[in-house]
Length: 255
Length: 327
Image 1: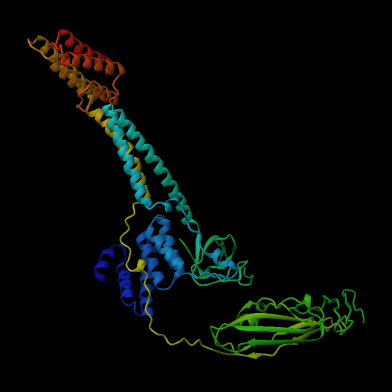
Image 2: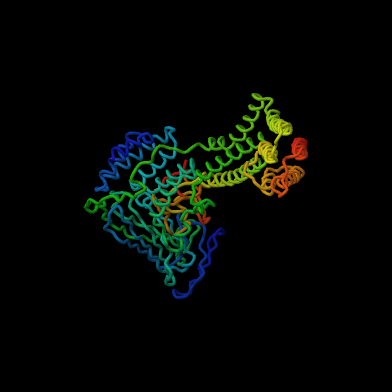
């Protein structure tokens, strides 16, 4: 059964990666063994990604493999890689949310809230229809409008002309809104971001000799906005606006 | 007390151990590093907890300096600047102790051994200035003394991992299967699909005009054909011996149906008026049609009903010609 399921997804996955992923699922009774398989699968997906095979399927599979291998930081990075390509992909968003929910942000000194990432809210969240369906709806409405307009034009029937023009106006308004939402979300996911892969300190300068900016350590999975880079250190900004420096050895950047 | 050398500034006010004194420490002769301490019987102690540890553990290293004359002015020693400490340990400063007794400073650090080869915390040398010792010009370093801590032996071993018990891996539902092939349309394709209909519509219209240049005129002719047919029928009716007004009405309503593309179901003048309005016919035509139908109905259904007259046929012909003129 699992074999049949996986044969359908082989097209989207390098064969070795899919094989390792399947082996990981089959050996889930032993977490240590399963994690090794998922780690190998993640490395294969990463190889495919780096060789130019960049699509949402690879990004999602890579993120899942990282997550199951226990690497929360790189899993978040991989979900964000996919969302840069397709900011409206529900599976990627759901996966990212699930991984984020498993991060234990420190609660001391109210730091927990400031380390949590800022959600990319959208007007579409209030609608139960996906962006893609709405976009195709707008396209269909526009096509219908132009068809009616052409028919009305040819046969001099005013009701067809009115109906066609109305459809086109509605489709244009819907398309404009969707385009604006798309641009906004793409800008959000395109921000230069680094993700902590191993707990580290946020310091006031680009060296271990500088004091810590905040008392608590940044846990693995913390998402940081990158402001600059110097000497193997990244200047970053926390979601609450606090800025500081982290060693680039403890973070991965979303590329 | 004695003043020595023109480059030295030395003022010592030591009125007793229990009295806070302002101490001016000479610049010349200061050792490096120097933490700004001054005292007479200064004592430095170092403690470490724990001393028996694994590589994963850290040590709380405490330096306690007692007998200071200027406790507030003493700066925290930077262990990273001391080669032996920096080589053997990762070092983090711990927060300052809240309540330090007068003349005492306590500095705490978190030390993590860098490897199993680390066997001890080295001695820590704490230089200080003793105001009781004179400072001769040829040996300005004389009043700067050094207090040393003892070497603290450490027992460091590898971290012993707890026996690994086999535990299952929790796989959340979203990770139960790999993602299917990427089915997202690229955004340029969606924009293309959005912009295609207007171009197709314009293209279709232009194509239609090119392939059928007489199309518009044909449509008009089609309408004229309906008028010609109706007029011909009326003329045939007029020439006939017995013509009913119903035939004339049928001829006119048939023409109106074709001319204005009416649904074709209307039995009363009111229904006809309504249908013509919906078809956006001219008001004159609507009024003429209603009048014609009422006249015809009167001729057909009144008690003194008479067969169709030339007048009714003439009205019908006028109505049709007016309608064509209105177009």
